[in-house]
Image (cartoon, rainbow, N blue to C red; front, side, top):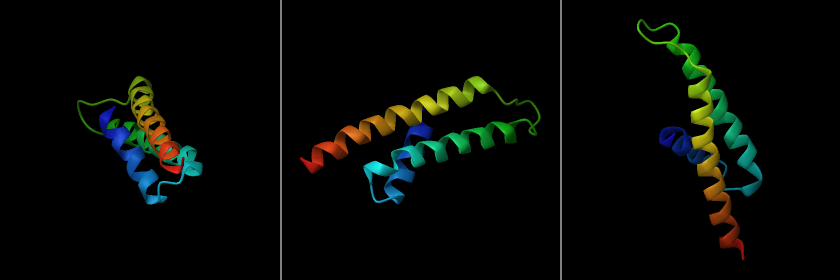
Length: 76
C-alpha cells in the first residue's frame, strides 16, 4: 500500500500538484499495479492477484485523498 501511495503522489507531483489531476494520477498507479501483477505471473514461485491490485489501489487512494486535503488547504 505504501509503495503505491508514494507512486500516486509521484505522479501527482509530476502534474505540478494540480488537484484536477488526482484521477489521472490514480489511474496511472492502478494501471501500474495491474502491469506489476501481470508481470508476476511470469516469475517462478509468484502469482498475480486481484486482491493485491485492490490493496495497491487503496494505498493510492488514501495517499491522493490526503494530498487533496493538503492541496485544498494551501489554496485557502
